[in-house]
Amino acid sequence: MKKRLIVQGQLSDAQLATLEHLFEVTQLSKAMSLDAPDNRHYLAEAHGIIGSGLAITPELLDAAPKLEVISTISVGYDNIPVDELTRRGIMLCNTPDVLTETTADTGFTLIMATARRVVELAEWVKAGQWEASIGPSLYGSDVHGKTLGMVGFGRIGQAVAKRGALGFGMKVLYSNASPKPAIEQQLGATRRELDELLAESDFVCVTVPLTADTERLIGDQQFALMKRSAIFINIARGKVVDESALINALENGVIKAAGLDVFEQEPLSASSPLPHMPNVVALPHIGSATHETREAMAQRAVDNIRLALQGEPPISLVNEEVN
Image 1 (cartoon, rainbow, N blue to C red):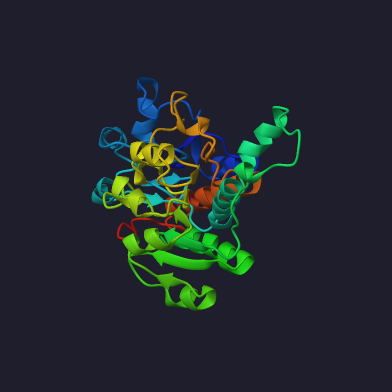
Image 2: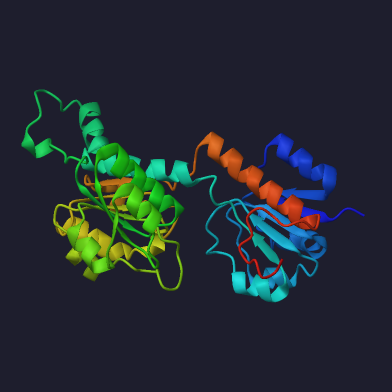
């Protein structure tokens, strides 16, 4: 008898066909809650769940006694109770590596766009205000040769730093739990304590995962340490930053500008002042949002759940102690 699998969201026809050849597949729309009453009977028989933005709770797990594996189409899994899965012997798979370069592209796009005031000036041109050569009030800031401070230095942080150091001759500082001697040598990067990094950097780019230790890691105190000319970039998770402190820092000239792909609440409320500030570039969480990368992420998630349900080691297993 084939094992049963729930797919939440959209896979390509080929990916879905691969799973349907091996398993009994139930496909739910991304907008449909997994634990909605109409879906309880699917959960009761499910051996695996695959999807993006999965909201997993202990109550949902109680309704899925046969569950063996959850495969999330993402790197982050802060909305999934890993300890609870491990306690129940359920594998959690994610999709690192395949989105590293694309997300780093997004980070460096925000660095460039905020420094050169790209969005602000494009809107200024659209509004018909370009009537003469621009003056100093509309000048941007150089990126090349400046100091880039990376808060977090995992795969994505290192990829952003490579773009800065090798492409723009930037001096790289990083704050990380452990030293990274190989990348230090490659980029001439220097490890700093967080407070030192904030004080020395022209651009501060956050790439840490969201954990109990990193939630609201950046707040009033940290913004006060930054240069008034500093530009702040967040491509990690919105809750790593105290958003009210960020708004205060931008409104009062504590820092110069911000480029943001993530927010405390997503989608961002229309009442938020952030997207209306001329010194903010706000994006709708597009870090990995290219056709090529989303396809690769989905394929990794498909491969993960296929291997796990066939009794083989998945490619990317978060809670390795379960396998």
